[in-house]
Image (cartoon, rainbow, N blue to C red; front, side, top):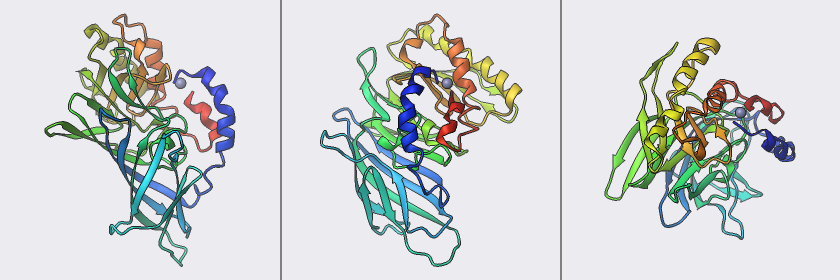
Length: 329
Ligand SMILES: [Zn+2]
């Protein structure tokens, strides 16, 4: 990401949050499945998170980061939590932590559990719902480094990577890009539903979706060391058509790093014009670039090279502790 000055502002925040997850030794998240409905009338998202995790020690609760609804109306409210047999289980939501009470186990053996969390709210951060430079409504996940918690119940720590699947239901005019490969798109009367899944675990900081009025250009597929990877440009429908080629340099850059550093880890490389707060944000397999990078002048090669490099440094190889967050820069 292009964010040098922003790093300074983060120091205090990260020092205070480096101890905010004491359970990393006892819980390991295997996968998240997020079902999210977005709409054009409010900024409230209706969501369900299905979380599969391993309990490595006999702890009594699963603690997740999730920002609570505040007096200003921003934040998330959990309506219920179900176990794998769809029975309600107890939870508490305090100090922006969601604690879910687990069935007790007596033996010191591992067990694997599934829970479903139903929640809704208006994100205070982490998912930007706002107009782009052309006045069109857009949704962009912007989690780095610890802002997934504003809209996704997660262990929001770079050391606990997990697979992720997204099912996003949006009004018909939106197209949706997300971490992983698109598995299907279902069209209904007024909405489309998009489903994406990753094959590999990724950290929450680069686990996102975006919805906007996009035009998409698929470049040729790249034959890399271990796989064939589709590379694409996603630009606003109001952007000049020649803007597709501003990101075309990603083809040769990706091929170069794949030969130099080792096999590329993700199933696609989408280069996305976006509303990110950063100059560029290296979300795994779909990089979000500042919306002003698209002008048809092909002048962002340095930025593209920087963000594609993060697919190895920061996304495939990730930090064990917050103090190592320099790896993402
Ligand atoms: Zn960077």
